[in-house]
Image (cartoon, rainbow, N blue to C red):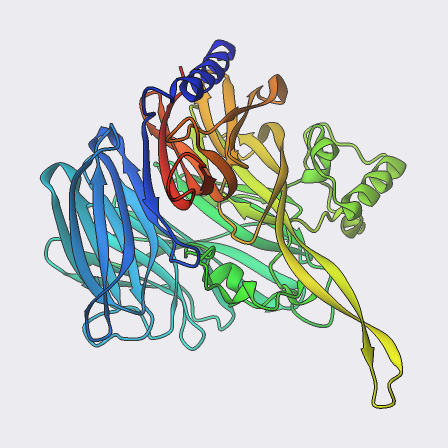
Length: 550
């Protein structure tokens, strides 16, 4: 693994130096400031599907979406334009070896269906459209494809949460009721394709300081077979995100993030705050209302303090185990928040050290609260372990002071807060066995990243007992090698290849990098580029780069 990281640097540096004579594997689309985000999905060696709304209108209240498929050399093989209602928004994708499934939601018009699933088959150059319906003004939570059925989980202000499914072959529709409890929130859906079982993870908020998490198990036609009620649910802990992983033979693992509820007079957050409404949405969209007149004091995004796990064994739900970030190995090496540093001294003073990281249920839980805003990732399997990853960020703003004058001409100072953006600070990574016990934990610093558009940046690549943690930001790829809780190679950086050797990146945002196929990875993002050797010396582009870990 160490040799591979050295080669990455050599490949990238050589590519940059050699770009005077040859073009790197890079695809660009011009994106003037203020345009809608460009979306992409990579699927095996069949290629990458790039899709976005265009400015040209397709008819009354319609906008054409352009779908372009690139091959493994990032060359366009075919494209197609599809008219959609102007209020339709892309939510989430599911990719398989043979096809890409794209979920769109029409928030304003539902006469003929407000859910659209497009199946893109790159090698056949085919796009098929399938429609369904969820309640008016409902918010989509999750999207899965299994056994030629599309499953859409949703929450609604006025109606109970639910799952709607429909066949991509026959159009047959199925509905899965979650619960009759009023204050319930669906967090995740999971499908056991081999057994045709469907699982819904949800929480019920009984009061400002008490919530409870459950998992429903359904058969394929929508019948509720079991509800798993997990033990050791501490009243002052909020479940912020959760995912259930079916493991066959009436077994599974529930895991997610939790935070301490320190409020006693009101709920800590609004269910329908943007955190949940846009969890799978383009919450980094350029017209996001959170970017206008942002006030950190009014931000009700749930804060988290650790991971939790619980096992289902032989159809019986076990107890929830809590793992506080403050007990992670070298946690305070990555955490720089002032509140967290005060927590560090409290923990040292109380000498509350647990070797395995699991926390006791004492009355001093609030003393260990880190209040971290997290971007949680889907849980991944690393052989015999399940790996949980989350990125911590915080809103940042500065205060402007200027002199104002009253009716009599007397001056007085006035201050206003100006939102600068969200600052990424670090990521927590931990591996858990099938019983929910933490086997190791680690982290990665995320330096000098401040942006107004949030997205999942960090990713992992596994090989044997080692893992590479990497992210794309500030026009560089940062990577670090770990072996469980041990650090094999500290963080190093390599530049993102540019189209021309004379290009100079001035700014970037929404950078990402993820596995594509084999040893290849795809890095994407937006860049403002300056090049004095071109007639148009400045350009803003969305780019896709093919890179290799060898």
